[in-house]
Length: 399
Ligand SMILES: Cc1ncc(COP(=O)(O)O)c(C=O)c1O
Image (tube, rainbow, N blue to C red):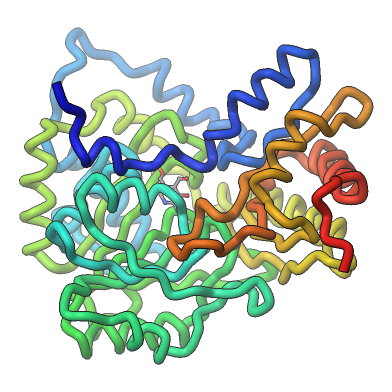
């Protein structure tokens, strides 16, 4: 018997691979503050939990492959509130944003084809590309520039005859960067000129700070045919376990192909689509409270870490992550050491080493991703421990 090369080349999630060390620490009775994973502690809205309670059916049956119409209508209406014209038929419901990415990558690229993506990037893009034999081609962004896009020459440099798309994530996981309209415009012009697709991952659309406005790809009507939006209810409504996401495109060919993929896996989860429907029916004010809470948490991280010697961090602009450059020689060893050795009054913290968010080898070795998904008091404590740990870490850089 032989295990496939596809399976062998698939990465372990760098976000999850230190979990055994965290578990061991917990078995010893150590309290671990989890800043490593984007699982918000914000409560799922009661309206959604009520929809779960009130869901009545004698048979939990299959639904349409494209997703139930009421949910696609609700998503079209929600997008309309941001000024994006979307028809319910231009939406395909997926099993989380993850499946939306799998479908979209599959639709735009064949084995050996390339997708350009600014790095650091959401690490599961790697996993999905590996499953499909697609090469992610990075364009590096830098902590010192707040991880904003480099000049378009950097995109030109890596463009090849195998390039099929550019993938942008805004607000960004892992960097917390919100792309400005002029940056988006430059990439839109690039994909138009090259005749390729623009995939935008907009799962953190609402989480923008300091009055920033999110610029969605659908704003650029002159490029509608090129644009494919990936979205999800996971973070937006604190509904990560519901596994509902979607693909939106004004390009009907993309939708037709996506429905074929959707048919091959029958349908998205029936009960959860009803929960998502209740979520999309919430008033837009719901997002104000959540945004304010994340901004408060961002402030805790920023106030604790900014201006410290050896730490490089621009003020995070959105989502609930940031990539921080630390005075350590190897962020993976540091992250592991936090779990195996560092103790502070019986507590420690867990962060995600950044190399797993890069496609380029050797990048991110002095960076970690912090997900500020804990309430402010716990976050303050975690930041206090991080600073203390940096002083005690034997692998700290002393220059
Ligand atoms: C940028 C980004 N895209 C997509 C996803 C996938 O989310 P889900 O499959 O839960 O919808 C995540 C989850 O963390 C994410 O951070």
